Image (cartoon, rainbow over the protein chains, first blue to last red):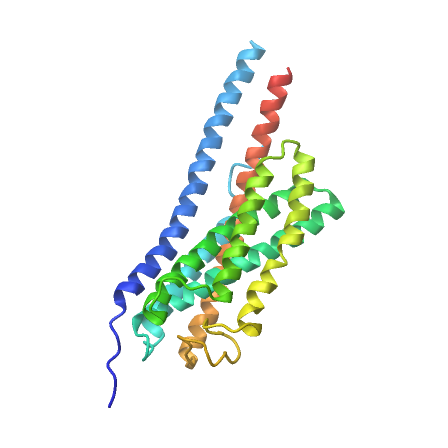
Length: 53
Length: 235
């Protein structure tokens, strides 16, 4: 007798949500940190200009 | 000042990484056949193993960067090491969580104290300690030296994790080579499965190098800002 293939689609969706979600979250964190550094660089430039004046 | 514009090489590598991962996804869902015993959840295997592979690769790269730093004393190698560890931790965590989701239908449990699961978790914790301890060192030179030595010692957890399913009694399937008779959830790969698996490994490796270059670029910018801030404070 042939056994039916179990329905494990919910676990498939869960697995790929974790994998792709984790990757996207990390990429997002890189973008956020890059933008935060850009802002900080802008502030430093303003302070440097203020000191020159 | 740091190079704020992305180089052409990095743009191309990023595009290649996206293309490779999307192609691997197509192979996983459209080309690889459904496994008869586990059903659809077996498809998690392709990206789960690829994530674990990148995790281990990252820690090996961090150790190589550590050795190179200690020999050359170039700051960039310290940044490469720290960046690689961070990426390795992300992929290691993804591998543990996705493995746990696969294990539920395959082993009927989310977690078991199997040698592979335990060694992987220990490896992850060893590098979590690296991140925490490294942040506690103020002096950049000492921090870099500490990071290099730690990464060289810490990489010992990689072969232990990799070989744990080959030398210890385990229920975790061995992907390459024959498995333990006690392994649960093991399966023989058909040629399309093997091709999908190998391509996923390649895609994730390309993704790793793209992420590494982006992370190093970020670290260099952060370091340049830190130096400017120190100069301003001293002025």
